[in-house]
Image (tube, rainbow, N blue to C red):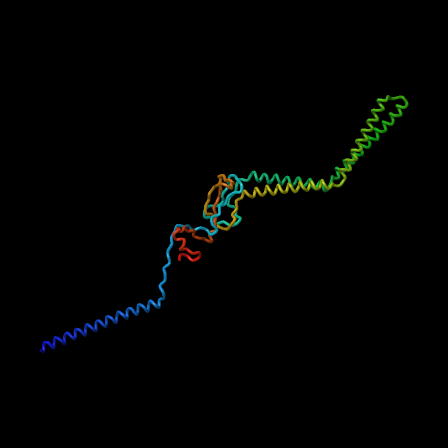
Length: 287
């Protein structure tokens, strides 16, 4: 009887210990779950991870590549820059052979000088020496005329006296008429030299001068085009031609001498797969 009581007491103690361990385990589980839920609540709703989109691309100037060519066809006299060089707006990057264009400028300048002199001559009229020469011609022609008229009158008197023939009388009369015509021509020439310029002569001379100046500007413009200048501040990205090579001006087949760009502001050009296009937003990156 004593053994039965001892066994019962021992089993009861084991049950109590097991029950206590079970209750402790349940308590720890609930506490762990409560702590996890509290941490999740404080952290807020779960965030979606950003999708990573990759693709081939290149870094390039924001200004994009600018291909510099020549407006004239010809041979390059010199290319003054190399790839990677920094350049500024208006800088001469390359130069064409320009001897022919420079000769055209010289010829046009000479034409302007000649037309300007012609205009001033029309405005100022004849020089004093030319006026004096014209007046001397009038005096000479007048003396010849008076002498011829005197001889003609003398022959008339001799013909009336029967000393000379009709033929001789007519010859002297004809010489007098010729001398008078020459005198009148000299007088008209003197008036033309001494007179002021006519309006139409001055207008024609002014028009000739303006045409010569326009031709000079055209020749200078052609000469200026032999210098290839930079339109921006930037850098030389690629050199397509070197000194001595020929370049052409063609709208159908571009023939650039240099490629330049502004490296102060860069951008990345990426080729995105068409399946990822819908995931990209402007100025926001991948969603």
